[in-house]
Image (cartoon, rainbow, N blue to C red):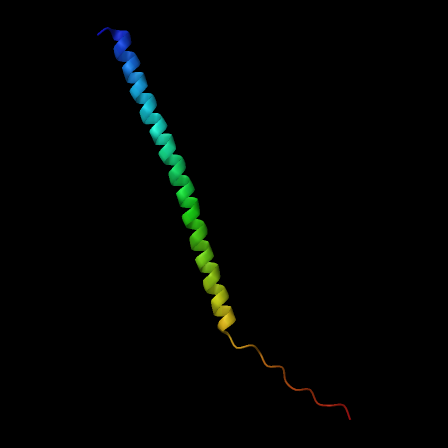
Length: 66
């Protein structure tokens, strides 16, 4: 094997590793964003449930005008 074949093989392997890393990075970023969005939805839903559990304020009956 001559030097050019070895260099081309190394470049091809490095290219494959680089493409796999970029693909994994993009998948991880999308997955992380999705997880953060779901956590935010859970927090908001929890706050809304706690607000909805409160008893509404009862308006005092107004005195009738004489």
